[in-house]
Image (cartoon, rainbow, N blue to C red):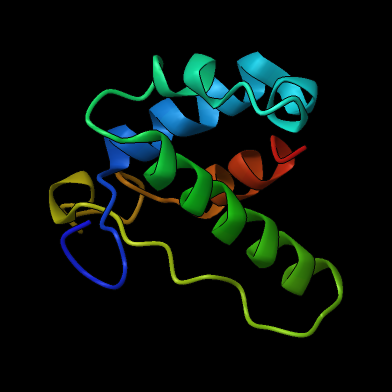
Length: 101
């Protein structure tokens, strides 16, 4: 890894979310990370495992009201700021969090 915190692009994170949803928790519990990694180009199995652990910690903190909502970073070009509708991520965050196993 390049640094203490591995940076993920929006596209990589979306591929990760789809892979987790597709391969369900049983695959992960069995340690079949190779299947997940095939769906997330550019990331190693170790990077995917670490990203998954961070996701679990975020969900646990949110569900127990022990931490603030994560500050998800979005590419600036997704929201041009002209009318407030383009790039509005309020609903997107809720949808993404509802996909968490």
